[in-house]
Image 1 (cartoon, rainbow, N blue to C red):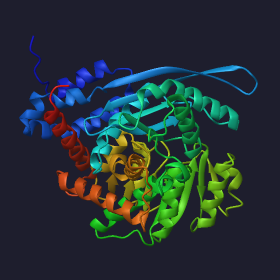
Image 2 (spheres, helix red, strand yellow):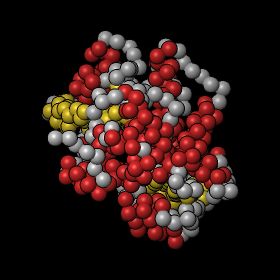
Image 3 (cartoon, rainbow, N blue to C red):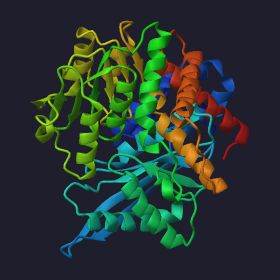
Image 4 (tube, rainbow, N blue to C red):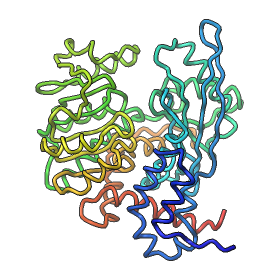
Amino acid sequence: MTQTPLDQADFLDEARRTHAGAPEFLQALEEITADIWPVLEQTPEYRKARVLERLSDPDRIIRFRVSWMRDDGSVAINRGWRVQHSNLLGPYKGGLRFHADVSESEIRFLALEQTVKNALTPLSLGGAKGGSDFDPSGCSEGEIMRFCQAFMMQLAPFIGPRRDIPAGDINVSSREIGYLFGAYRAQTQTFEGALTGKDTGWGGTCLRAEATGYGLVHFASLMAEEAGRSLDGACVAISGAGNVALHAAERALKYGMSVRALSSSQGALAWKTSASQDDIERIKQARKNRNADLESLASELGASWHGGRKAFDIPADVVLPCATQNELDADDAAQLLDQGCWLIAEGSNMASTADAMVRLRETDSVLYAPSKAANAGGVAVSGFEMAENARFSAHNPDDPDAELKRVMADIHTLCLDHAPSKGDYAAGANIAGFHRVARAMLDQGVA
C-alpha cells in the first residue's frame, strides 16, 4: 500500500500517537512543524520525499544501564542514553547531561533541536544528545570518576571522531569530559577527537567553556543593533548560575550592561545596581569547589536573596534564560512584557514553554530569539576543536572571541534572511536549519 504525505493536522495527530510518552520531544516537533509547514507546501519535492516524517524520528536511540560503585562499596545503578538523531550533515554532535531529572523524552527533544541548531552553523555537524539520570550533587570526586568510567564503558562502542562526538552539558564540565575521555582512551587504545570540551593542554580549544554564554550575548547585541538599539546601559536578568549563565553575565558586563539577577532552583540573587566581575568570579570559584549555594553567598556579594523567586521576577530590559528547558512560562512572559523587557534570548535549550513562546512571538514589543540560534556558539567552537583534533594541531587565533562573534553574526543573518516576517528569529532559525537538512536528505537518497 502506497503511503502518501500527510497534511499538517494528520501529521501532528500521528506524531502525538507515536510519541505519546515524550512530551518534551512533541513540544519541540510541534514548534518546528508550525514554522516549516509553509515551506513544505511550497516545495513539492520535500513532501514527496517525506522529509519531515523522516526527521521526526531519530536514526537510533541507544539505551543502557550504568552500574558503578560508591565509596562505601554499595552498587549504584543509573540509566544512560545517546540519541543519534541525524548525521545527514556530518558526524553526530551534541552534549551529554547528568541530572536526576534526565529522561529519554528530554534527550530526544534535545537531539532534534541540536540537528536544527547545528545546521545553522557553517560546519559539517549532525545532531545528537545524550546523558544519564545520575545526580552528581553530594558525590565525591572518586564517585564521579567511577560513574564517568562506567558510563563510557557503555557509550564507547557508538562514538568516534567521524561517527559521534559528544560534548559537555548540564553537570558535565571539563572535569567530567576528562574522566570520560580517559575511559575512552583506555578502552579503545586510541587518542582521537571522540569528545569535545577537553582541557586545552591535551586537545581542547580556547574559549570552549565561555562560548555558549559569550555567543548568546553577541547574538543579543546583534538583535538590538538590528532594531536600532544598544545593550550598552541596559540591565539584564539571567536565570541560572552555571557555566552558560556566568559567562553570559561576564560578557554582558563587557557590553556595558548591568547584571541585576542570577538564580538557582531555590531562588533569585539580585543586585540593586549590578553584579561585578569579582562577584561572578566568586560564584565561579564556589561552583568549582562544589559549594555554589547562592543564598549563602548573597551577603558576601552585596546582593539580596529572594527565596522561591525567579530571575524573571527582577525587572530588567533584557532577559537571558540560561538554566533549563521550559523555565520561562506564560505567566513569566506576561510579567516580563508588563515590566518593559524588550529583548529575550534563550541560553538554555527550549527555555520557553509553548504558551510562553506564542505570547512572546505575537507581540512587537519584545525581540525574541530561540536557543537553537542564540546559544549555537558552543557547538560552533566545538566544531573548531574537532578540526584541530583532526589536524593534531592547535588553532590559536589572535582574538578567539572575535571569531566567535563572526559565527554568531552569520547565524543572525541566516535567521533574518529566512524569516517570513521582520524580526521573526524563531521561524527564521527553524526554516534555515530545516532547508539545509532537507536538501542533504534529497541529495543522499532514501537511506
